[in-house]
Length: 441
Image 1 (cartoon, rainbow, N blue to C red):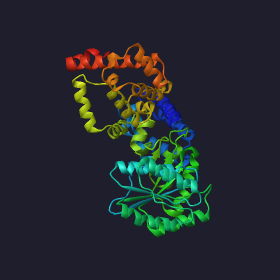
Image 2: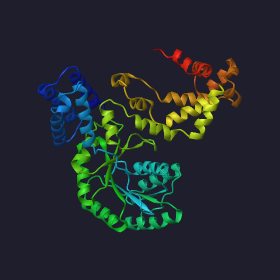
Image 3: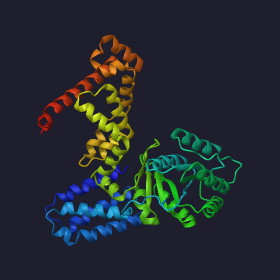
Image 4: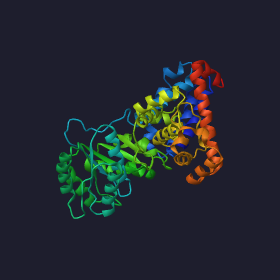
């Protein structure tokens, strides 16, 4: 996501920072490159023109010309203007003040509405809500079955729609059912079409009028670029959207839709889908996204992911074990599970400030290695997980056979674990002084 744009901008900013002082020509040359980078990222050309004009106006002002670090000041201005272009601040779902809120998910067929409904349900449950999934695509039995399957996997209730029911009646009956189950938020997965048509719009308008939803979110495929922005405009004209969800942002999308959608439609981008897992939905924060694009990292999102993945009671119990040097292979496995919940390791590293994007691009991290390690530990007996020193030749062969790995893989894991324990013991013995001695600087 945004890799090419980030690379291009990084090149431009290196040149600007190379000048001790900046003049209008330096700035013009740099902004021409920024404009080209935005257009190549499929940003709407009017939006690109406007944001470059605003950046130039500020870049030629006193805050840059009288600065001791003019290159850094220009980067700050670009960051500010990118943030403003994408909406300035995160806009969450407006569900407060109602005993039963409702979110109507709309969009073309194949945009990812059903999957997004499940992700959003999990997101809301983690926020303390009690969601109720409502399948309304009566034209595609598979869509109804898919949402029921997702609900079962996530342990979230689903209204038992059938293809012979009317969409509006499903929504109205679901409102009654939700109240009976103690749920507070309906997530309505509406029908889509391969293209916009009057019949689809009439059905959606009928649902809107009949249930007065708290939110109407367009789910659009980021891979379609500016088409997603145009589709948002058409749906907004007919239904007055409250926001947009862009899916498949982890793919080869150039990112232009995410950058343009607020500026073109006036509607906020509220969430982005960043993978296939049910947890792969992120609240969209314009300021954080601008920082990511400009290579400044996204520490806040990293911290939030960590807080979601780590149970505080477990963390305190683990701290006690570490202090007593009682950290077992079972604990090792559980910590890996927590890390995996946070997402791709490469994506997580990319959120850290100061990470060189070129180095990251060349970094080869196989997330399947975690599954391999977990399989090895699962093949051990409870005693072997507690006391790794008893794992010798015959035990290693048995563990390797049971996990579908090689003895070398078992040895590698045991070596890594032993080295980790040595570091923990050294730290516990010497505190901060020993930690300083362990650092390579």
